[in-house]
Structure formats: structure tokens, C-alpha cells
Length: 103
Image 1: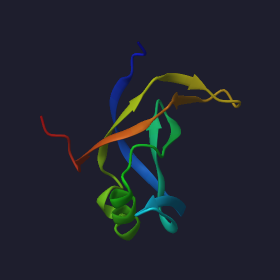
Image 2: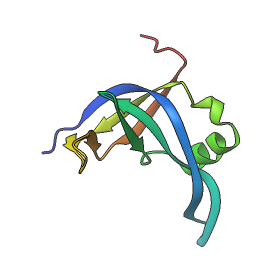
Image 3: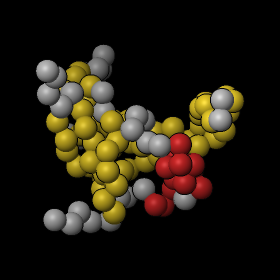
Image 4: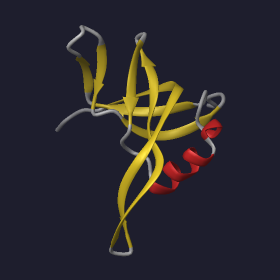
């Protein structure tokens, strides 16, 4: 059984681009949120998995709804890139908390 970790991060940037998806049996492509960027131990990490189509469309129309907000990201482990930087293996968006995390 693989163990995954959850951590909370501030979204520091968004990236928009063409995204393909299937709806009602037809393939569609439209510009929407591709990924968000977080900082993990001082390194930029892009998180693109875990967003629903509706979330991708909403954050494309209103990026301020996620920029600067705290999100929970699930990942398998840390990894090292070619430049010696630290990244995350299989980072996946889980939860949008808003401007401040509430307990």
C-alpha cells in the first residue's frame, strides 16, 4: 500500500491553456486552468491534477478565487529534478481553504 502525504500551500501562480475533456460522449477543448504553482521548501512546484472541469473553468474566469489562497495538496514523496531542486511526486489538488486556513 502506497502512503501519500497531505500538506497545505499558498497558490503563488496559475497557468492557463488548452484542456481536452469528454462531455456527453464528445471530445471538447477549451482554454481553462492547466495548473497552479505552489512553493515547496522554496522551490516552485506545479500542481495540475485533481481539479474538476468546473473548477478549471471557474478559476480561468476568476483566477483571484485561487491565487493567494491556501490549498491542500496530496503527494507521494519528494523528488529531485535535473537542476538539483526539490519537487513533489504525483502532486494532486485536494481542497481549497480560502485566504486563511480555519480549524
